[in-house]
Structures are given as C-alpha cells and as structure tokens.
Length: 237
Image (tube, rainbow, N blue to C red):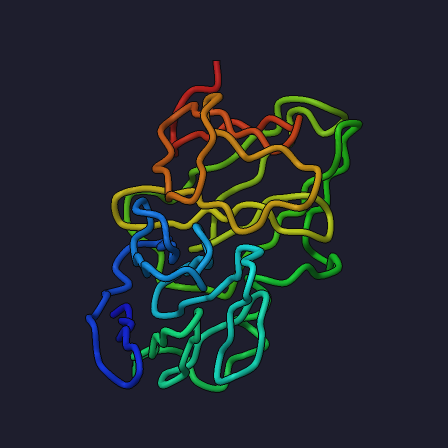
C-alpha cells in the first residue's frame, strides 16, 4: 500500500495526503496536489514519485530548498518516519510497508548510472537510449509481450521487450522517463529533465508531471528520438 504525508506547521497538524497517485507536486501555486500557501515555498517546490510501495522526493530547483531530517536534498528515497521540511512547514512520511534496507536498489531509480553488461545500450545520431530493467515485481496479466520499437536513428527497428514491471528510458547516463506496468496497462512518467533537453512527449503532447497510460501504437519522443509502443500480438504494419 502507498504511504501518506502528514502536514504540520509549528507542531500543529494541518492535514493528511495519501500518496495514491504516481506523481504529486508540492508548492505555493493552486495547481499543486499539496498546496502550501507561504512565501517561503516556491510555486512548484518539490515532486513526489511513488512506485509500488516506495516514494522518491525531488526538489524542483526551489528558492529555499527541500530538506529531509534537516539535510538539503536534490533527490531522495523516503523512509518511514522521515520529515520533509519545505519553508516552515513539515511533511512526515508514513509508510511501514516501504522497503527497508534496500537503498542501493531504490537509488537506481533516481540517480544516473553507467551501463552494465547485459543491458542494451542503443546509440543513434540524435542521442542515445539506455534501457535498464528494474528489480523484478509480479507481472500483471494481459500485458506480457508488450514492447517498444525504435523508429529513427541508427537504432531504427530495434525492439525492446517490456518484460519487467518497470523500465527506464533516456539519454545514456541519465534516466528521463520510466514506464511502469500496472494491471490496467503501461504508464509512462517523467523522472528527470536534463538541462537543455526537450520535455518528453507522447503523440506530440508533453507528459508533464502526470502519469500517462500508453495505448497501442503510441509514439514516445525523448528529444529527437522516437519510440513506438506495441501491445502483445499487435501488428506493426
């Protein structure tokens, strides 16, 4: 089960927020999932990415920074009981079901890493794509056999089977998007946007901070690289 955040100010509890969405934003503007109306808080201050039982916190280049247990962070895998400080407000992370003792696995989701033997590393004349399966999870039924196909560059025609519960795509050494398998389909979410990069898109539309469900023949764009999504047994013609 996903965790929750308890919002407080000067030790007074202001509310609770369930982490039941893949991506939640925190900030002063009204379009945030968790709005904190305080001048010490940036318009879009931080982002929370929840994958299965685990939640990852990212500072969105805020003016005053994001802190966990008093330490400034850029990206951080949350543990049960940790306290996030944004401005003068606190958000306590509550999730006893979160992974324990698996920091090495969890940081793989949010930190750039070098390619490893056995991971396809495709380079094109418009950039490169690193395909890295995450730790195994039970596979939902009905989606076995789904895959991606590179549409342009020197890797055109290369197929990448979506055999794991979660895979990352992006420039070599920097994960840009992640595709997660759920019982009702595959969903793509933006992990990070390196400086100078174009926002990832699906069928020409920026995915922003939301999780987007992929449909058969959807085209994913990461910078100039184009990748098509195919469901199992679908025709590629």
